[in-house]
Structures are given as structure tokens and as C-alpha cells.
Image 1 (cartoon, rainbow, N blue to C red):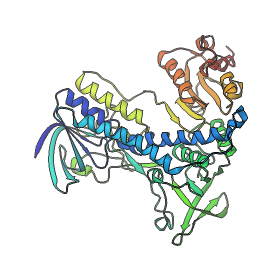
Image 2: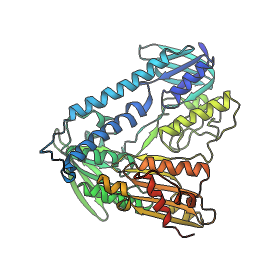
Image 3: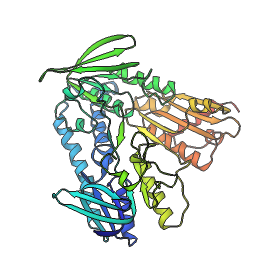
Image 4: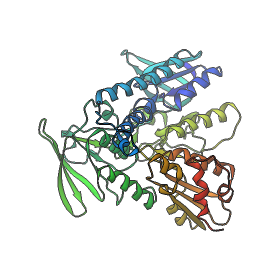
Length: 462
């Protein structure tokens, strides 16, 4: 058995930078990766999907440019070229990250399936076919998540369904894509493939898409997607599937109180993700998980076993790359720089990269109401934003929830072009304690999207 100072299981956006940082600090470190280096973000998440979103936007702009006085007689979507472009960017990111790790002194990279044999020991079934054993006083789990497959739906195992991973490998545009799930992942793919030329239908169990957002934000995004001929069924669920050989997939869908049959060429499952903990042997280590398999941690990201930490999506909570990366910085600074950092009360900004984007940080109006806060809401349609008018895209709105007494900004939702960037401006204000009345009269460069934050807060009476 080989002993290390630290072992990291999983090379995601917490594991990979942590491994390098530990090694550079003189700690003999091993990082074990089951599949490919870089985790979900580089290989199956942010990098490939946002690359394809950019291709889809090009198609959208080509379809709209005549309105701006630039005539294009026609355009063609080449799915193979889109995939090739995406793959090149993914490989560049993956290989760069792996090469940087492999060239780092004190850091060993091993590809294989890690399983705990005791609290501080693991065995790895390597890709070469052998089994190796290792131990360390510090172990960090960063194995991420994977798509949920609803095996309780009758006939699901008899159809060729897609997941958010496998859909990235398509080389032909689906004729009709049925998406189960009306949240962030499902909506990004819905708009993307609609712009590539697919007929798209969304099935969402809740009363509206984006059920975790305020109703006005959900309704705005619904209008935007419907304008692109995307069909949305809410209060709906698939009860069973049927498919014979190469025929289309028949989905039996209960919509409110009636049942409909929807035939589609492809079905995408986008109902959520679950932690990759089932093969880790956590019981051998004594590490506690919740009923869904997420690893339980305290506010320092340590499990119930001293010296074993869980980072990123595998621990539950906000499943975002930037949260995973922040987990790494918290753990490292606490352990090796004498800090006393916590995950409590950290900001959780996020973006949904539909076009236009949704940028969100802080609490929603619904949450403010539930907490009984004395709050005000500022709203501004993008149709009243000069920059949006000038660029020809006035879809969306700006919304901020503020404390009526302290004038602090409590939460922000921006649906609009560069929505994530506008949200980040207000996040910085929230971080710095800058109140909305100061932003109201702040001098912004004209004409920018952020300049309209003046007008957003002009709507509030003191």
C-alpha cells in the first residue's frame, strides 16, 4: 500500500485545482479520475454546451439579420461541424488541464475506479486492469453527479433516450426532440435544438417552467421560448414510453386531466442529477450520506469522518462549477493558510445560458415574502433599455428585490442580453454594501446595459 499526504477522488472543478495547489505546497498528492480529466464542466457541461449555445445563436442571428438591414438569402446548420467545433474546444481544455496536472511535481494522476476499503484507505481498479491500494490522512471527494434516469416510467428502458451527456454526441439534428424537464438544463437544450431546426416539445411536471424562480421571471422565459415555436406543456408528466425497432418514440403524456400521445424522433431526459457515490464504498469509510446519496458535510465541507471532505456537486446544494471551485478555495485556505472560512452565507450567483440569459443572485421576491421582510421590488422591461433597443433585442426584464428600510439589494434576476454580466454588477454592489439609491445616481458609461440600472432603481420611491 502506497501512502500519500492527500488523495483526491475526482478531477472536477474542485479536485483538479486542489490537487495542484496541494502538490505545489509540498504535499505528496494522488488524484484519481474514473473517466476523463476535468469533470463534468469541461467534458459534459459548461464548455461543450455553451460552445453549442454559441453556434445556435449564430443560426438565430442569421434568421433575424434581415430585420437589421443585412440580407442573408439562406443559411445551413451543419451538425457535424458544430460537434467537431465543440469537440476541439473540449479536448483543448481537457488535455491542457491533464497535462498541467501530470507535469506538476509531487502530484500523481491515476485513471481508475476508486473505492474506500476503510476510512483513510482506498483501492483503485485501474484502466490497465490491475488493482492498487493507497492511503492518506486527507481525502477529498469530488466525484460530481450524473443524470437521473426515471426507471419508474414504464417502457423507459425500451427506448433510445438521450441524457445531457449523450445528446452532445449527435451528428444529425433531431426531427422532433421531446424534453422531459423544464428547468435550466432542459431549457438550454430546448432553445439550442429549436434553433438548429428541431421541432421541440417540453414536458414539465410543475405548474410552470423554472418553478424555483419568481412567476414573472418564469412567464417571461415562457414567452421567449414560445416565440421560437417551442411547445411547452406544464402540469404534465410522461406515464409510459413505447418504441418498436427504429420507429419514432411514442410518449404517453398526462396533461392536467387528459392523456395525449406524442410521437418524437428523440427524447431527452432532463429531470435532474444525482451524486456519483454508489461505487465509492462510503460505508466502509463510515461516511454519512442523505437519502438521495449526497455526502453530508459541515460548513467547512468536512464529512463526519475527520480528514475526509466532499466538494462540489457530490455533497448536494447548489450544483454549479463556480461553487465547486469555491469549495476548493475554502478547504485549502482553512487547512493550509490558517483561515476559518465557511460555506454559510456565501453568495450563489448563477446563469442559465438561454438567449437571452437569466442571471440570478440573492433571494427571490417569493422568498422575501415568505420571510416576512419589508421589501420593495424594482422592475424594468428590456424594451425600455437603450442598449437593447439599439442592438435589436428587447426581450426580457430586469428585477431587483431591495430592503425597504436599509436600501440594501437583497436579490436580482436579469432576463436579457448579457443578463449574467448585469447581474454581476449588482452582485458586486451587494458584496460591497452599496445601496440601491447610490446606484440610482451612479455614472455608468453610455450606452451600456448596466447604465439602465439607473432607470431600474428610479422606479422605487424613497
